[in-house]
Image 1 (cartoon, helix red, strand yellow):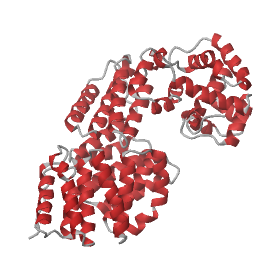
Image 2: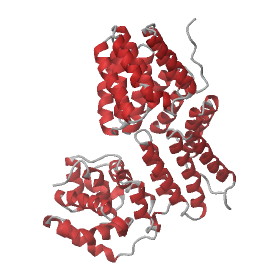
Image 3: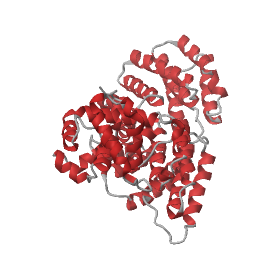
Image 4: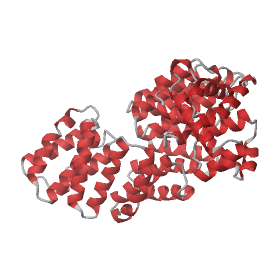
Length: 492
């Protein structure tokens, strides 16, 4: 029996091995034999979706194996790829031979015939370089392993030193950014390491994108100076193409990554201009258009146009419906619910919570889990459920403090202080202010924000703090997060 859900991600690799290496079929031939669509087979092999039990059975029958054999191969591929160590893992046909030869003893007796077929296929000459399709099938491996482990595997496999693998790792870095900035940076540096080993015009393309992905990872890690420097490296390469002037694939993605940096640098009109350019050259597919609209909504939010941001987020969700990739769908719905809460529409935001919780469970834990609980607390506050909001925000404040995310701790603390003051719990406000001492020493909290917090602390000490003051400081912190020169204006 397979080890689900871990093994589920490797069904695509197992199907690809059987279809392409053992049988030599095209995707269309497998689709015809199984009664499924070629698009479904493509999505399974790419790891975008996982076939259900009935579809797995149809695919297994079409490939001439039992369901137990297909399950066993998926489990073996997982074990093999996650346990290769410094021996490296093989791409395309060599992967099939490696799995078969090295893991025969691990297979259940029922699937020995499959092992024999794979070993017999070893005599066929393997391709010299992994194709984009074969590299795409390695997505679960990239998602599961850390950058050091990946590098130790890939350094002995020149067949993977390709633009397609640079892109695979770079995009995984971008996906990791919202959950783990450290992993995002590790993967982006690994993508650059690969790009430096790709030759010819493909190597130039690889370096252009690798520097852009590194810039994005540094931006997420709050190293804006490093992000600008990395982006400048990408720009210099673009300005000096090699002989033959190879065409850059996906130019919209480069514009998109730069726009995100311009947003964090408070160069908001420039960010919107870049997003306009990206929309002009990007494919007119729903997910890409929705992604660009998501970044635009962030720029509008930073400009203080929450209603404009809400309109753009609704447009993005209409582009993709509810069948989009989980990370993008979760980001769009979360941002919409957060904006709705900020403009006093907590009831509408509350209706989105069940679906958001489902998506959140798919995307992962870490800071996302904390921010989800934060959103729930803000919605409870907006609906007048103050005790529930206090419970949520107390947990959120402590969680951010534990993670040493001091700016978010400060903002959550001000929101919590406002609720305490509404309930007349002044003693709790005083204790809360005392717990905020690390915030005043934190490098990640800029000087103007510290001044606003100090003003609130003095008001608490003088027993003149009000819910309105706490709310104004919390609102200021939200606006000033990416604008350290914004000054908190005291009430007249």
